[in-house]
Length: 168
Image (cartoon, rainbow, N blue to C red):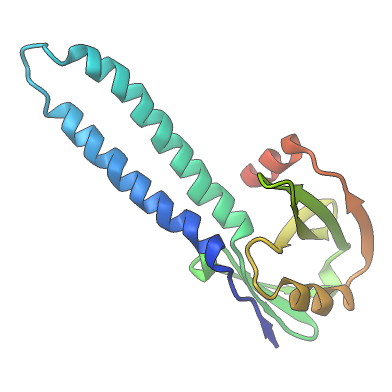
């Protein structure tokens, strides 16, 4: 059995999201406690949309992205158990025989480098995504999976497909 291990920088966005959410909550609370005489009304109209945008972004970033990418993986000889949200999500058991195969893609990052993603495909849908960014033992997981699944090719990076994958 191979169990996934997370990189420390993969957990950092979750910690930052909690801090950002706390700050946004405090700002929202502060905005609604402003003086009732209207002296702070322009600040309210300026800050409230910003607070709502940040809340929406945090929701998308934490819940949608982490559900699909921050997967805890337990790899067995004929099956795989996957749970999202850093292992705190619902567990799903899959047999390798139910998969069509796997694809690889390179996701560019801010520093000009790339992170490799391995997508396990069932039919035409990406069911599981394992990445070098999130998983410290990505190469070990990849080696364990590639021996059991058929390689379907490399998929070029496309931002539209990435966003579509997050919400599917």
